[in-house]
Length: 337
Image (cartoon, rainbow, N blue to C red; front, side, top):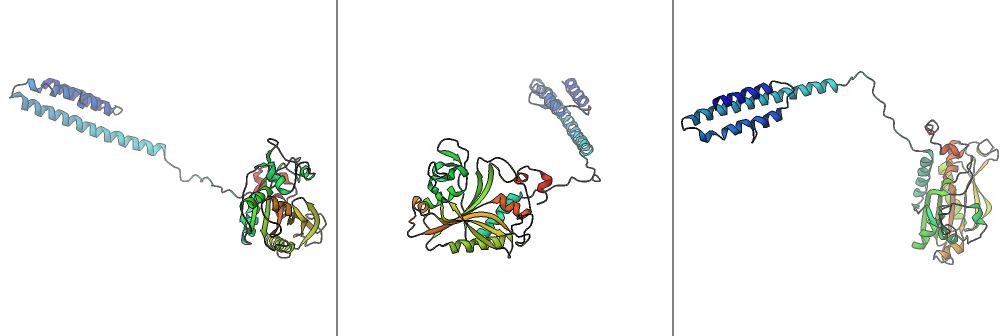
């Protein structure tokens, strides 16, 4: 047995001398539950009483020497891995760092948030609705029945005969009036769709911000005062507004609203095409039929509504002469804003 123990020691220590050895495999082979040293120790019962203490002491010495060698080799391999990592993962601090660029808001989002802030400051809240809408909310609830000529100017994309992509954010107003009794004061910004050819001033997808106020005693004077406050805040204190008679099926009376050119002050320039005025929105008093359809008594309440294209406001603000530039994702163009 003595020779067997010495042989196990010599083989184990020799195997561990290899710096690239698998230490765990060697430990299991010699010291594991089914290892060679354990197998020898199970034979201790066959020895005489005089031999057992001697062989037991020798076996413990062999185990201790193997365990000591294992610990030494583990530390050696650990140190070797650390040295390799320091070489492979070293950083040259003299190399210039990579610049982290930060994104910016798209000019459309920037202008939309500015517009929202102005109206929120006047007591409006933001209301949202689905972009895929029913014909009823997009047309019928807004006093535009089937075959009405106004549908031609708001031709949109139909999913079925009754479901379409909204051509305006006005359906949000109808939905709010159905669920909420006056007083109502909301704006509804969002994407809208129309079957338009793409050119410098038209797109099949664009953005609108519409507003609605319904309460007792609301007049055209309230509408003008509110829009004048918006224009002066958005374009500057010297900005003036003017109303021009127009027709919208969902408002009566209706008006197109212009602002004095904030570049030339009304004298005429390239931005306003020499007219001194820039058309920015349509507005009017909510038609009694619209109030009645949405469950609000027009004999008790009145209201006004308005709507403007966010692209148009953005183009005016930044002097952009082609709407397509806003959608082309040209970073060099967008970095200007």
